[in-house]
Image (cartoon, rainbow, N blue to C red; front, side):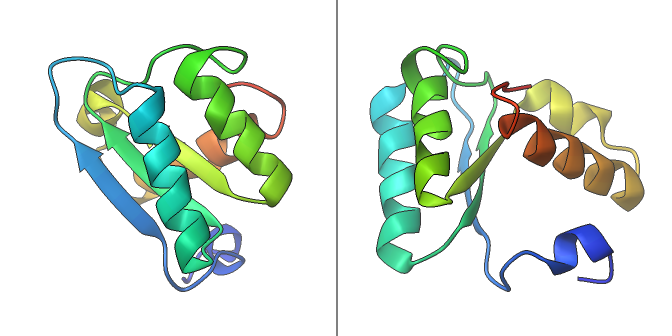
Length: 108
């Protein structure tokens, strides 16, 4: 938590990995959000190799946007994101960008 941006996060961040050959759907995203809620956590990272179904208005993407009403923030990282990580600084920047974009109603 050296980075000032990350410092504002909780000490515990739930991370779940889905190394599937298909996109993660609504029931799995809903279950991940439920796990966050049950643990009283606000931040989660869902690593989904092929991404999630839908966008910010549809399917699993819409669930992530709805979770914001409860101040639960979920960042989705896919295989191409993982492959683009070349340094810890690069990872931090990716997380910052993904985190900020969910507040403007987009998923990247």
